[in-house]
Image (cartoon, rainbow, N blue to C red; front, top):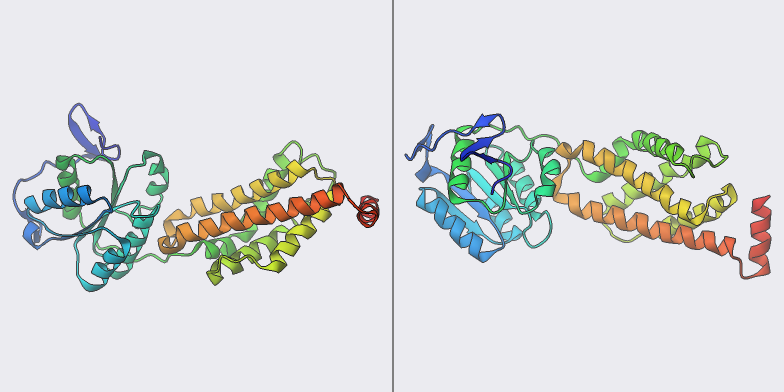
Amino acid sequence: MIRRCCVRNGNLRARGGHLPKRTGGVRMGPLSKQDTRVLFVDDEPAILLTTSAILRSDGYQVTAVGTVSDALREIAGSKFNLLISDLNIGHPSDGFTVVSAMRRTQPDCVTLIVTGFPGFETALKALQSQVDDYLIKPVPALTLLTVVEHKLLMRESHRVAETKRVSQLIEDHKFEIVQQALRGMLAHPELGALPIADEQRIEDIPHILAELVAMLESGSAEILQSTLHGAEMRGRKRYKLGYTAPMLATHVRILEKAIYDVIHKNLASVNLSFFMFELKQLNESLAVQLEHTIKAYMDVANPSSGLETEWAEDHRQ
């Protein structure tokens, strides 16, 4: 059953109260159903067929497509009053790409997301500036038609809000990220117990953030050698500061959480077209850097040559 519009004692409820009863007619304010153009996007052929038929039987003009590229082509070439898109079209969260394109091109269009993942509800709530509403699969026909009619009746002109890429959010909130990471490190029982200055705990973070921003803005998934070299230097430096190998991983997890918390707080302003790609890049970069940091740390902690032993002894003094 629908979770976004929950059913209680047989009555359909939405945020703020009851949805209005369906009129059964064809007029919806100034626009009739026959004049209402709907773009429906889903990569499951059976759902595409049946849902389109339900909407058409209720009087709507429906264009049904099964891929993101087809949806973007329709948005660029035709005018729509309503977009209904599955969240995952081929790839996770592709539906946000379609919604973002519609918001930019046709800001007056009502947009609905359909998802089979109720756990995604919290994130979706934060995206209400771009998504008018969302439904949880499976969506009963009557519920679908009721929500569609209600949202079209409540149609408002949406101002296209300024959106930012993840890289911009990191750049704009880098001081907040550094301070939150420091608080997390001080609160951790092992990291907080290290007898080092606060500046030593976070001195590398601004540089790490700057490199992440540069990588994300370049659009390239390649991690520069200079970035990996910096990660290795951090491993050697933290050996000197008294870190254990598990602390290195904890250090990165705390930084990662600080970044994600900033992104989560600003989800409503995120440019959805780049969102999933940039998160994937960010995760992979931090993971690869951690691998190089740990390897360099272990090379110093467990030297296999006299030269490495001398280096380790010099830097422990």
